[in-house]
Image 1 (cartoon, one colour):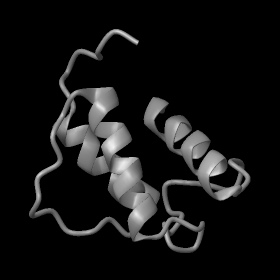
Image 2 (tube, helix red, strand yellow):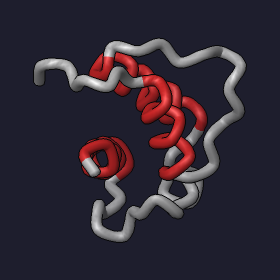
Image 3 (tube, helix red, strand yellow):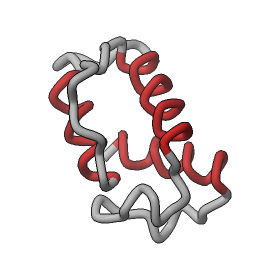
Image 4 (tube, one colour):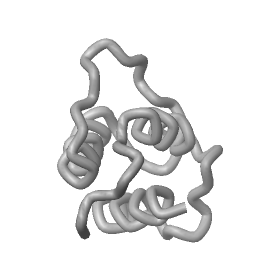
Length: 81
């Protein structure tokens, strides 16, 4: 799962949390992702996948919630990386 690996790297860089224990069930707050960091992460994902996050979505609670939001938004063909 490419997006999970991307999130692990982001969180490890920004929070210093080891990437290994981060799973789809990991609570964002529990692994050190506060609201400002979540916005930063969402902007990074928007840029990478060339999508726009709707303003009216509920705040994701887990890593899996965040991935599910972007899986619904991203195009079926991946952008050139």
